[in-house]
Length: 254
Ligand SMILES: NC(=O)c1ccc[n+]([C@@H]2O[C@H](COP(=O)([O-])OP(=O)(O)OC[C@H]3O[C@@H](n4cnc5c(N)ncnc54)[C@H](OP(=O)(O)O)[C@@H]3O)[C@@H](O)[C@H]2O)c1
Image 1 (cartoon, helix red, strand yellow):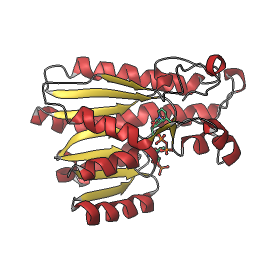
Image 2 (cartoon, helix red, strand yellow; image 1 turned 180 degrees about the vertical axis):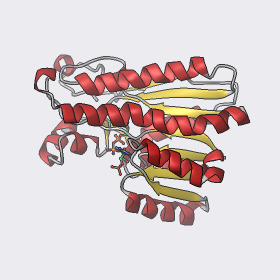
Image 3 (cartoon, helix red, strand yellow; image 1 turned 120 degrees about the vertical axis):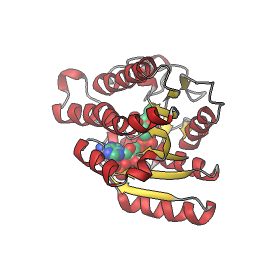
């Protein structure tokens, strides 16, 4: 069995790679920053003796993921666990001031990218009658917050696709889990605010956010349940973030 993780070059995806490697699972890691993946792969091979394949991939590139799956059929068909983690928020404008290029980026990555990646694994999982798809959603896919608009819409879409996969794959033996975190300290806010470190730091100032490891622990726990048990959804907030609504609690959501 091996585990495919999209967006493994930082944050939650990287933490998932470390956790699955520590659990002696072989890995297939993808992201755009391939050098980071290669360094991580080397470290995990040395530390845990697992096999790790890495591929530079932009999940928006449907032709590339299809070509990789065809060229490396043995590796892709050996994947039993797919962690759809690659994703991002860009900008924090009210919708009337939103930038269409940010909207395209979020919808193309968070939704279409997840679909393109999932599609290449379904035939082999269906044939094997087993598999586990873990989609990293968000609390922003459960509730909307002001200025969350298109990011929220993309994560509501992840929720809809997770439910749809469960219906459409019923009887196939494939499990589908959605893990929806609140605020996690990763590179997420740096990306959202285009490298503005001050704005990114302000998000977490005076708070104790979740760590990427908290989410990886949860993903691993879901996957390690017996085959007849499917944890459909997990919603995880930091203790200091009681709700998604920042105005009510002075804490920004994600
Ligand atoms: N941090 C939070 O508060 C939070 C809360 C709820 C949900 N989430 C979700 O958790 C997931 C992981 O985010 P994170 O917090 O770990 O942020 P992060 O540290 O910025 O990691 C995001 C990962 O996604 C990858 N990625 C982004 N666009 C990609 C693309 N087009 N193709 C391939 N890979 C891509 C990045 O790799 P490259 O840049 O190398 O491609 C990176 O490895 C996302 O889906 C995010 O929406 C985060």
